[in-house]
Length: 322
Ligand code: ADP
Image (cartoon, rainbow, N blue to C red; front, side, top):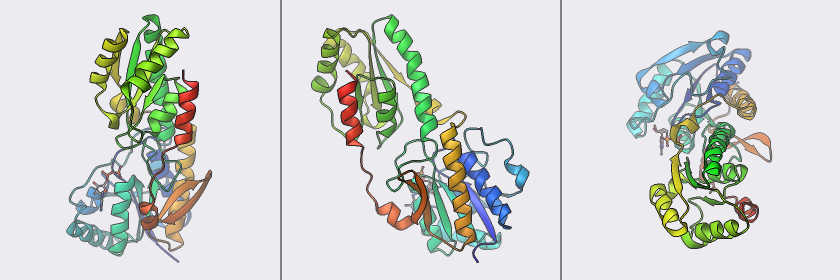
């Protein structure tokens, strides 16, 4: 058999649904007869020994809460060979024989390194960006999309009343998934993502003018953060089209809020599987969704996968959002 005493941590950017995943890991671990320890503030807590013994009630009343009750952090110190060794030593000292890491790609690299130092780790994808190549879904994405939709619907009311154009920046430095899916859901005239280069005249001005001729009088342009320059873009649109344009950067509101049903459910299923994998003696695995099913893969293999942008969906947006 595998681990007798496991730990759970959340690392990197927080995402709604992380709590549901922590809860599932803790409850499954205890159900299987293991000891479960919560590590505070990601890998930092492993370096300093900032941990808390978990019982069934430690994770009460958190399934509906955004953020992460065990806090998260980025840990530059852990990201060194000495840091990884120090974290592994701490695991031995605290009698931790396996760790579930909830986070993004960076956190999985850490999990791979910690496994290499002798501590079996399992990853769970938790990020609002949906940017993990090996998984078609990451915990937090659905909640973030719904937040964007709610916010842009509000913007639409005022944009429509004034016959204006709204340029909305949503999160996603290297990944345009959030912009693409929420952009379709709010009926954005143009969606700009880091994966696809855009032409200002063709992709924005011409589209606005075309739809204007067809009777449209207000416009929403959704831009992923990684594209950059939204303020400048707003000014150019106003200059080129004469349409009053306002820029809104949604920012960190997109990270918060009560997780949706989907995030709670996926997080619960992934958390259950992660704890079970450690119990059964597995290590260096990541729990992912493929074809709608929760499965697990080797972390190193998963990290080598290249993420593919959903060009088909991008083309659909082009056709119908006009
Ligand atoms: P995310 O997990 O959301 O992608 P980061 O990239 O910030 O977030 O990674 C979170 C933490 O994981 C980092 O602060 C660091 O401690 C650890 N980490 C990131 N990259 C590596 C790496 N290449 N090797 C080991 N640990 C890493």
